[in-house]
Image 1: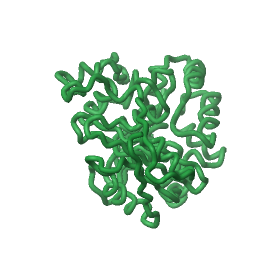
Image 2 (image 1 turned 90 degrees about the vertical axis):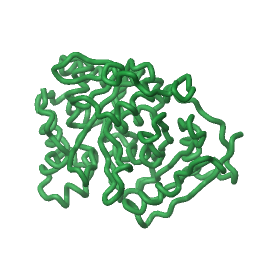
Image 3 (image 1 turned 45 degrees about the vertical axis):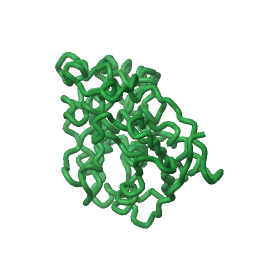
Image 4 (image 1 turned 30 degrees about the vertical axis):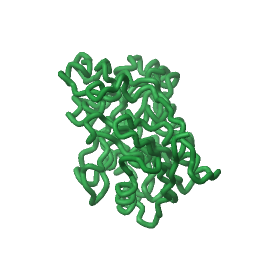
Length: 333
């Protein structure tokens, strides 16, 4: 099956100049160019499978989700299993990577309890602290989270996840049952590659991030605009058991679509993902560039132990300096 060394840079070189490549996100390419890029990424896939993938990515609502029925159709087209299909699709996931610091492009796929597949790619913020980076595994898991999955059952990144990601995955699968799929190797459980794990139970939690448990929050200042409603919805779905500081971000694009990000904490604190990181991962999974950001709203609980305001403004200053952050507040209902 496909060679997994294809990067976004290599794929977009098919367009000719680097300037054009940077300006046109892969899913928005003209159909003939998109087909050429998919042929390069997935050379052994059938035309039927590549056409299905192109059609999915053209959908205005696409954000890196391949629904269960489409995943099954792709596996059938390729006469393979879902597990093998996930590995074969790594180059496609990796083509969304934003890695201006490391130039190390990573793609990941996870499978949700529904059977749907979710892509993720690493994201680095130019000129900023490496702590703002999102690993591909984190992006894929958070993608499943934002699509309302009840659990993540399998993951592939083409190798063993790094220690940072193993700790993050432990919050998504505290029982260690999530399967890690590696090409040409038997699958292994997270518990096998993260022995003696420090998990949610260490701080008295009885469950992890999945399934989502929605909080009842009410705006301090009632508003009915879509971006405020989206930020509130994201904050309600945040997973913040350690700080008790739920928060959510909503990003509006030039096309008017709104991308949400719910804060996801980790028992070890550092692998936690801010709501902006997750919203950016959603936007990038849809094929957009930072230049598409027109409005950003952050919603937090008034008086919470921690605030996302400073880090959100720092990242926005690097990727969308002309966009002013709207800071909104809520209280437990």
